[in-house]
Amino acid sequence: MARWHRHPNAVNADQATRGWLTSPGSLTAKLIAHSTAFRVQRLHQTTALCLPDEAHAIGLPRPGRVWEREVLLRCDDVPVVFAHTVVPMSATAADWPLFSALGERSLGSTLFYDPLVARGELEFARIRDGHPLMERARAALGGGPADTTLFARRCLYRRKRGTLLVTEVFLPSVLALVPQPRKNNR
Image (cartoon, rainbow, N blue to C red; front, side):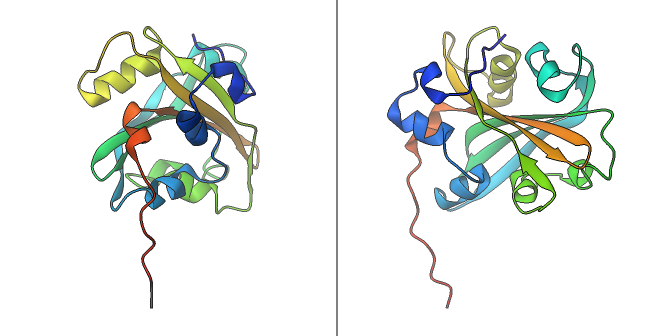
């Protein structure tokens, strides 16, 4: 189980990683600005049992069934972020009207432009071997080095009566990204 903290200093991330963890606004927009080709690779979207450290955050008394979505965010075809989203089964289509139809579109592109969405505070963690998100990220990547620690952030969003928890696990490749020159649209 990960220990989630309200302040990024608690996870002792290096300066470059901390810049990604604490970046305000849409992570999708930042990734787009750091690549020539951004893409969402949907791994799955289905019902599942939420993780123990997610239950309380989304208002469940214990781990229960949720809608779960997992994707890899890719910059120039390199996976840079493993993203995991859970929505309680009690949420309605009116709460999250676009969630079931996202496909390979970015969730962030809808969350940040919907005036009904309220964003909570970011929380930060170190994800280590044995944590389900570490195992899922490794599986999505087709393996990976053992004894790795990855940094993650999560945020609770509210819309009407529904909650949605987004966890973003930053892969080491994100640190190689550099801002791309802006295209001049004339």
